[in-house]
Length: 345
Ligand code: KG4
Ligand code: ZN
Image (cartoon, rainbow, N blue to C red):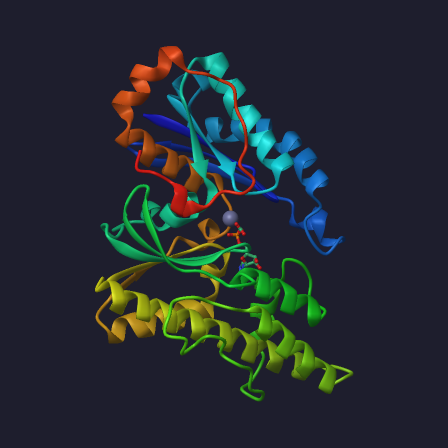
């Protein structure tokens, strides 16, 4: 079956074609980073308008790259939430109306399920069950994953998400948007010079808290005004060290507590090199395996949505085929949506 994936939950329009026999055939992405950069963050209305401009040309592009036509598509998977409502509405209405015109089923995908399953797009994917660390701009969660739609929340952030902490700290240091990659780049020039707290490191549970770290950075920055480049790099180094140490320690605790030996990491912060170094070393010491998506699939993309849709469709293939005649093409978006609410297909 050939699945078209549509992602438009935030500031990236992603389209992809996934074939359940042949794997990922094509994917294309337009990032709005440059457009939002001058505002220092995502402007929702601008995001929605840009998704409208990009979604059709990107669909044509993936079809051309895969040497397919619209008529070859068997189902359309799209991000229904969580995300910005206007942005979600663009992808959702596009997917539903195209499916209506082609008389094919749609699969409404949870954005975080897309991230969560992205490592399975790579060669030699881990088998269920595994522990997943989901670290994006809006989430920092540890989950036990037993199968598609079988997600048990093990730990969550009590305040800021890891990516959010990277973004806010980058802003404090006067770096550009998005902050995560900019801060990681600067940290590479830093040295161990300052000491920041490791929030909830020994809390005995699997929860995170990153907002205090950001405040500690603010205090440190105020003490060293005006900030020169070396000081900024040293602060960035220590901040990255603190976040990645906490994330790594909690991942290892989650593996120990669940008695599982497979970890997958996904979401934008999963692209962080320091985090990968620490997780590689820690899992190796404990004879566990860790898997990541390729770098471009850590952040938002259409491939993970097409894939998550394909996984769901495979499981409910019969049901989907049977229900096709009665399909209701009405739609809604879910700007707020808890991953743990998802059911098995
Ligand atoms: O998963 P994602 O693309 O979007 C959400 O669904 O939220 O994640 C974006 C987040 C941003 O906060 C960004 O700063 C962070 O991931 N990020 C990074 C890196 N690349 C992206 N954080 C740290 N290091 C990176 N290399
Ligand atoms: Zn995302």
